[in-house]
Image (cartoon, rainbow, N blue to C red):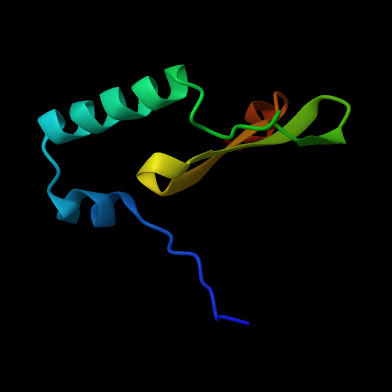
Length: 86
């Protein structure tokens, strides 16, 4: 089996790439056009509820024509602010 790894990028890593706002907008326009044509995979978001008032959800997506995949993690812990946590 191939040795695979995941590359995590920091804000600084992304800044070093040097993309212009024009390039970002053009890429997003292409992505939204492909999504509008149904050329994507985006399953329902799986989630877990770690407490009655808390959740963690994953929001994966894949666009074959762009050879791009990504995931957004969303968490909600409404009581954390009382503990000084994010």
